[in-house]
Image (cartoon, rainbow, N blue to C red; front, top):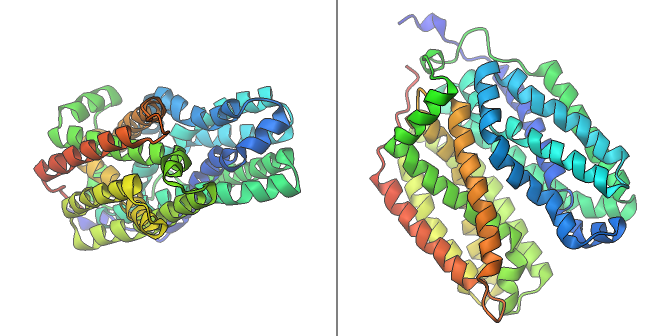
Amino acid sequence: MNTNEYKVYGYRWVALAVFALVQASIQVLWSSFLPITSEAAQFYGVTPLLIGLLSMLFMIVYVIVSLPSSWAIATFGVRKGMGFGVILMGIFGLVRGFFGHNYTIVLMATIMLSIAQPFIINAITTMSARWFPVHERATATGIAMLAQFIGIMGGMAVSPVLAGSLGIKAMLIWYGMLAFAALVTFFLFYRERPATPPSASEKEERFVMREGLKHVFKTREGIFLLIVFSLGLATFNTVSTWIEQIISPRGFNSMQAGTLGGIMMVTGIVGCIVLPLLSDKTQRRKPYLLSGVVMIVPGLLGLTFVQSFALLLFAGAILGFFQLGLAPIFMEVASDVCKPAPEATTQGVLWMFGQGISVLFIFLMDYFRTESGAMTPLLLVLIALMAVGILLIALMQESRMTDV
């Protein structure tokens, strides 16, 4: 092997920074209405459910568009495949802003933004493989996902301020300008790949998407990862959606629910930095996945039963740290064990099933609540399913991490 064929470029961090800006921007657009549901319902003269639809659409559309977007990224590359989503984001972010007084147009623009999202999110592991050596890829993926969580937190924190001081239409205009700025930055500075690949793995021959999909579902470790990742994502999305309803039967108020949600996001951001970095440094994946999934169980138990607010925050911190922090490692392991399936295909399958199961559990959580309003029954189901996830991770082989 001629090692001169492979080189790691400093520009990889520029590419990652541009990529992260786009990831954060699409999540700001997704989360913009979450903290102002009542105000938005009054502004548009619609029910809170129709405002909630503006957020739910992102999960529903993701299930439909995930595989086509993965095919586009694997076939045409990140700059063109993801670039299509970036164009939709920039254009319809502005449309949603300038017509922000009209709910129907806002809804139509949101549908287009929902279509854009999988083209953006499903490119993460492909970008990491194009620009980063294997021992840095979980870190790069973690930074990209960190940008997503920062975008969600930004939308949650800034929306009430902008909507309260400038109005909802002005808020949407500002978010639209952010999206358009991300579009311009992406096409000015993002490059498809460096002049020479960072490692031999980037030159491996890959399946086309159809063969890649078959291969993912024929791989034992791939199936295990798909099940556990989907359960973890569904748990986080379900808890995040119903967080106030989960804890209110025990006497906690909406302000405490907001604090709990903030703690989960902050510790999740920390986890997205710490866990992938440790995994890359130690060149191990399985121990972090196994110990992390184990720790999710007491986090869920605390969220379900504890009566003390301090203990509730502690449980939320554990849940956020491990659920969000493990996601980049899950995606990198899936890319490794499912080779030669394209990274975008593997990632698209993970997120598609995870989002689909999330929508199912969000509705089931409400349907199976008790007469007192408690959501304990389905939370216990989620805890039992995560216990099964521990067994599946324990049965997995260690991911192969090599640059050659």
